[in-house]
Each structure stands twice: as C-alpha cells, then as structure tokens.
Image 1 (tube, helix red, strand yellow):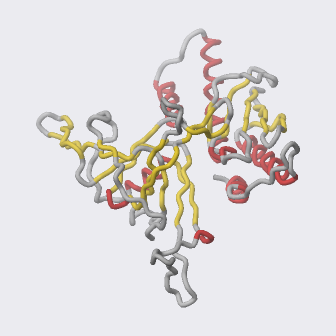
Image 2 (tube, rainbow, N blue to C red):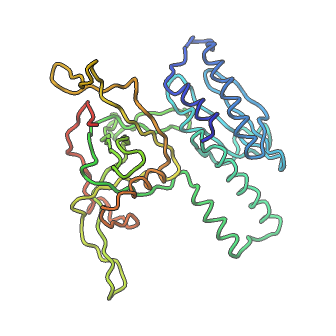
Image 3 (cartoon, one colour):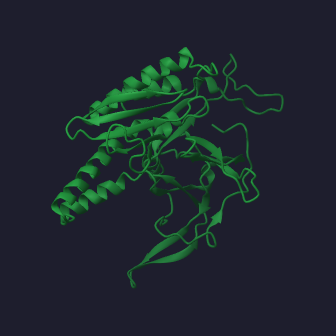
Length: 336
C-alpha cells in the first residue's frame, strides 16, 4: 500500500462525515477532494489518468482513461455516511466509451489493490481484443502463465487458514450482512421468514511466531474442523485420517484486505491494569494498533507456526463431515 493511500484511509476510516441532509457538507467535500487526489495517484501508477469525476450526494463515480489504449474504466463508491465500503469495496468495470454507464461486469476491490486490479482488467481486455483480431485464441506456455496470473488476482478466490483451537479467544452472535450491488450498501441477509440471519463472529489471535503476534483477526466466516490427510507411501495417495483433534480452519478471500487489531490493557498510574466493578480487565482502545493484511498474507502468518498438523484445505468434505465451531463462550474483554 502506498503512503498516500494509507494516510488517506487512516485519516478518514474512523471519521464520521458530517451529514447536512439534503445538501452536501463541507466535511464530505474535503473527503471527496482528497479521494480525487488518491485516484489520480492510482491511475498514474497504471498508465491511466482521471478523466472525469461525477459528484453525487455523499457518493461519487469516476471515469479513468488509459493513456496508451484510450480505454475507459468506471469507478464508483457508495454513500459514505452509512458504511466503510469507500475503501474496502470499490466498484470498477470496463466501459465501451466514456458515457457507457452500464459497461462490463461489475468487479470490486479494496482501495489499496485498486491499481493492481485495474491493471489486470486492462491487460485481460487487451488480450481479448488481440484474440478477436487474430480470429482465434492464442495457445502455448505464455498464455497458460497469463491465465494462471489472472486467476491469482481473482477477488472471489478463497483459501484455507489453519490455526490451533487455543487461538480462538472469543465468539459472539451477530447479524450477518452482505453487499448489495444495486443499493451499493451493506444490507442484512434475511432468512425464509424475512428476519435478519444471525451468525457467529470469531476472534482469532495470531501465533507467537508471527511478526504480528497478539494481533486479533475478527471474522464472521464459518470456522470448522478440517480433515487430516496423511501421505501413504505404498498407494502414493493421501489417506483421510478423520477430523483433526487440535486444529481449526477458516476460509478467507485470498486478495481481500482484512483489519487486524492489537489492543493493550488500560493501566493505572502505578502500572497496574485497570478493572471494572466486576473485576474484568479493561482495554485501552485509544491506543489500539491496526494493521491490514490480505487473506494470503494472513495465511502466511498462521503458517509460520511450525507445530501445526498437516491438513489439506484442498478437499471439501461438505457440511456433513465438517464440524462447525459454535459453542465457544464470548467475552467482551479480550485477553492480551
């Protein structure tokens, strides 16, 4: 992540933009002005320029133009008063021309990976045109490598993250929400009766061997007990040894960005930890540290723990043989 993007996100992430109702507040105008500057920087890094920014009511869309191919790309963020999608779920897509408001399929990216994803979609678009002009798809080793590289940047690809049962420090029941592409906002997922669906929020502490030790990952993805597979020398195949006795797994989006936090205890003047009237240790959220890692980077941090079992995350046995973790006690105060 570039310093400009990081500085911009850190400044506005926890800032509640003033809402003037039917008119746009000066606070939002300043936010949009700075966002415009960030988009210009992202566009420049991938050979594009900010062609136009269309201001709306506490949201905006933009058109980028590639300086070599003259192709146009559409960018959009939803209403910034109601969610944080402006940096975690930016909509982008191809355009046939600068006023093509329907365009190609919708894609979504975090702000820090927007430049990479724009570069990939531009590259793919150019290759498709080359194939059309030649009247056939190109074959060979180079095309296979490009296809693999394209899949590596698939924003919907999930990977398994393995961890010890002891690394779960808290769970609680929360309302599950999903991004609605039409309203461009996070909305509750409803069950068959029209009621908001409930799910489990899990807090997982990173291993001591990680450079981010004591940082906590909070996720609503399903945590389950994976199967253990052992390689058999005679049959030259992996043998299913059943459910793991000491390991758990959660699947994260490989290229999505997740926020990890580390919150110290609140201390008295003599250095002792403050407690509430029930004797629970209090946390100092004012000095909370935050890092942002992709799903792939989080997997690598958990893989730094060499004591884990050998578990294959490539075989999905289905819900009938995977045990979902639900019965863990929730605590409002996290352990250090």
